[in-house]
Image 1 (cartoon, rainbow, N blue to C red):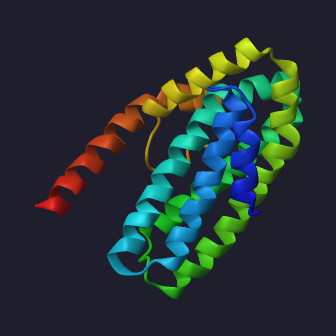
Image 2 (image 1 turned 180 degrees about the vertical axis):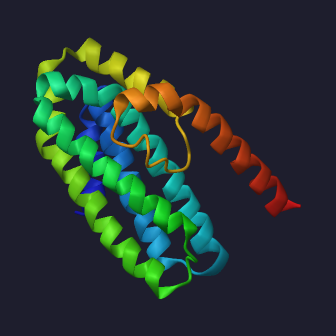
Length: 195
């Protein structure tokens, strides 16, 4: 059973909208998207990377806004800070990848290293952070957090913003405006690609 399948199976055991279940499902989807980017070529590879980039940007922002403050209280400040640091580093690499030609060998090399870092980060969350959050909150609180996570994702940026990555306060302050700009750019690019 692949890691993504294990994450989906674990998520299926949790109540609908449980924040940990939602995050496990997202981790599985991110792993699938990495596989799609690695196996694709040409225009499909660019589209697959664009989807991966958007999912990662939204996912990390929402985690920082909703989960990290609770993790600081349940798993400890050092654990939350370590995950924020990993996300800040990931935001920088994602911004680099976004500027590269997806058909270049340099892109593939950096993507492989980035995938390993993202996978290690997800494993750290699943092993250290998520259990503490789950044990430190009631089922009702976890479901409320899940709904807050989904709401935060609707206002999260779709492109990396390394200056705010890793900082829940910066995400709250800048995230909604950055999201508006990102989503407007995405819509204009999409309309141009279709026309």
